[in-house]
Length: 154
Image 1: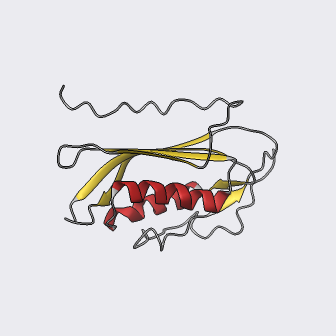
Image 2: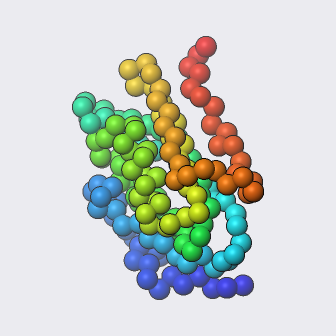
């Protein structure tokens, strides 16, 4: 088994404060030690929070991030801190969702990445946002995200 090089990581293995904003968050990556193997990686954040930029009220979402690595993997603690940095950040649902997808794509240069952001209702309307870096790979099993649309009590 190949040992993952963690020598350049700055947040793993110790106490780390939540970044003040997504722009301040330091996303980190580690080398993909199974180069040549194609597989999908999924991160689920069912308790994602941000703030409405107009009212300052909290918004809640269920995020699903899938990607097919090329040379890099996202280091999961840095991803948790990055996502947590939205907790005190005011932005619309669409901005948060697309920003996360673009920032991860910039960091990782994956073969493919998608984010499904399933936001809980505010003002009576749920907003779901979907972003992908390109077409879904047809020759690789990518499971459905499995998050049903918001149904309320209907």
